[in-house]
Image (cartoon, rainbow, N blue to C red; front, side, top):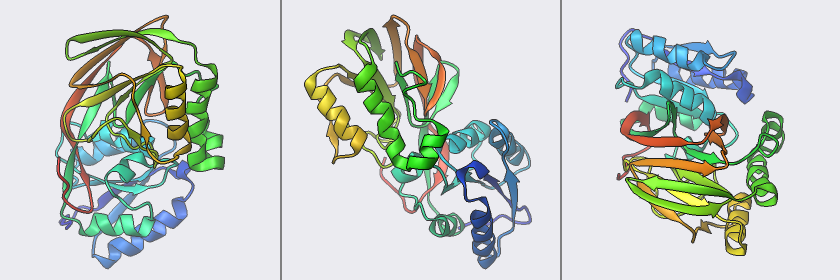
Length: 296
């Protein structure tokens, strides 16, 4: 249950998500029903959401609400890290993997109602790759041509993501990956590597064990270009049931990925330089408003 005193709740809205006017109306109606005041902040460029969140924390906000996709949620995380201010999510993106993982409804009305009424906060891990944070996963070796573009996400929605995975299968050459997990080193030829904080990629689940967003660990998967791996990746890409991964899998608190030759690094769908990269976990670094208490 929300108790904000006299301060309006900051609601940060990414209009690129495509439903700015409906979400404004819904938030207004829902918050008014619960006698809550709010103040909207519209983002226009990358970094705006982080700045708005930082300002809200400095101003003593009890929570920060975000309407947008996983990228906007990550911006909010960057703005509130180090504080105890929880995030309320109204999903508005293509994948909405964070919301899906935590059981938050994709329906604007239900998500807004949850923010106003839920007493539950789940402390979620944040991963750090070199000097950048992420919530979902980092992966390697994909070119910008293989990655799903903004226009493809707008046009095809969740079907845009299989393009990335199928592109890997079609074009990605093998590289030598040296992966060190909590001091244990493994070297193998692979076409890509995933370092996941959660197993949900916007409605697509990769079954590589019981991945949890609040266990203080990340999960590492190396994928080779063989028939079994390609079948597994096809199921993953097309969401044909759950893709059970039989290749290299490890779990740890700190992971270093080195490659020969150097490979591109992607964080939550955004290009972020090249290998090598070291991933560390910040356990329970952010709190998110959820429908019910869930076990760690």
